[in-house]
Image (cartoon, rainbow, N blue to C red; front, side, top):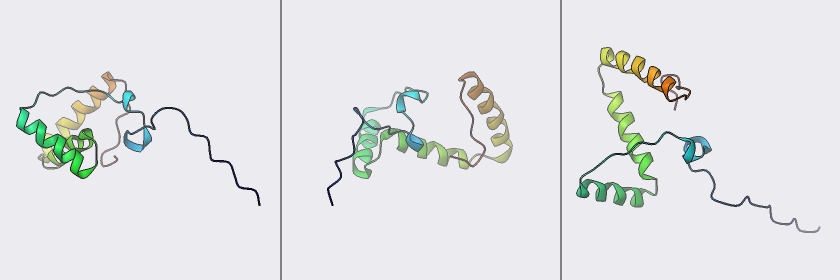
Amino acid sequence: MPEKPPAKRRPGRPPKGPDGTKVRLLPQVTVRLPVPLMARLVACSKVRGVPVSAIVADALRREFAEIAPEDGRTIGALAQREAGRLRVRFPDEGAE
């Protein structure tokens, strides 16, 4: 049997965002951190082999999980309003 030619790859880098989305399509945030904390964050990213944004997102998810239910409802309502302002679809609670 003849060998199949290798599959053609698209030029450029593959999408690295959640669920294969293009990172440039995600909302951007800038945070100023003390140098030692930034150094630890980058080192953690390299050791774990995950992007810095994934580590920050994981830390925020953990923080949000610890919020009291009454505050969580208020935050959820404000987050949906903010998501509308940013023109993004807000995922259902619990969906990632």
